[in-house]
Length: 231
Length: 231
Image 1: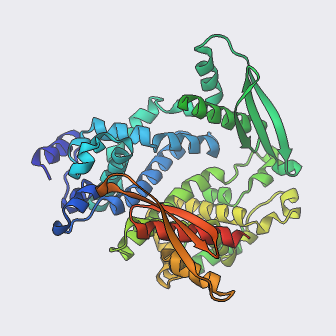
Image 2: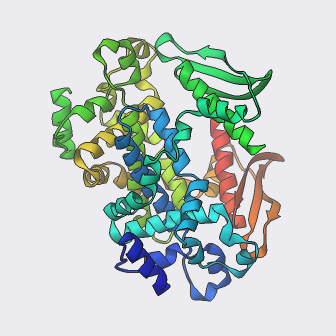
Image 3: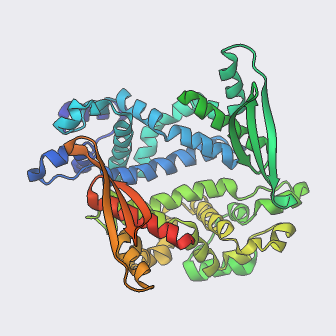
């Protein structure tokens, strides 16, 4: 690995790898391996597989402790927002990981170095390499300097209340009346499932299911936002 | 918690909980909480959220080490087969967890104690409680006595070769010719994506994408099996 990058990891995050072989693997894209078959390298996909699971657990544990009174549904939504392409690829760029990855020439020409999916995988493989070389506590230590403060500052909390968020989104274009319609109620009294549709100006924007009407409304709002933001 | 069950955990798996409050939470279904609002109990959903992530990491780590030469795709398929409803609910029954969960009366009447989805969640919440009370190493210790030997004995390896499996499945009804058709080939030379359809007797059984033709065929076979087994 590039000496400068190793120094950066040390100076910025207090990380010193015992052995850089996992780190090298984490920064090797399959396109590079394919173009240099004679080197018999490994790409970062196996380490990313592991890093993904490490991140899932460390973020889950953090959310579980930080929000002792939030129901599972909110924790799941929050976790999904944190462990998703957009946020992880952002981190990978911020910490300069994108400059370190070994890419094939073809991939480079296709602007592969900027692809969010590649950057997200790269962040996860870095986490995997850190875990393999230094253990789970060092990963937590790294996240305490990077992702956790971002969560604590509320950077992801919009996903915890999609209804408010949908309202704010729609009101950018002036006053809009949002309606939540209960379309279906299934299951026995103690274990109901509600299906709710969210409407504005006579148009269906999204739908959602949940164990309570309120939960189904939040899911419907999240679904509507997702679709609106794709337009 | 039931004294007898605590003794069972101790005798069978060497697990002694320091504090049984997480364990109680893990064995409390939302239907029970809903029927006993005055008790202000917590259901097991938050702990299951955490247990799910713990299991994901511990199983991933095991697979990563046990199969040092398998590509990520195979590890992912294997992990999905292990951490899925059918296998986890089986474990929950085998270890008598189903007898310990507090269910609401309505849920009990609806045969809720046998529902695979409930049992799977229960297994995950047990893992969550074990993790919170005893740490990750004790979870690994428990899995070494339960799931890992099952993996090592090849109980899940059928998912590693869906093509062979599909062939065996179809040949139960006599000789059948299976065809894999390459339908699409996209992307630049070094980063292709293949779309394959699997056919038998002129009928499309499934389809799959992959970075190589072989990988796409395996995904298509897995997809076909999934659909055939639902019939």
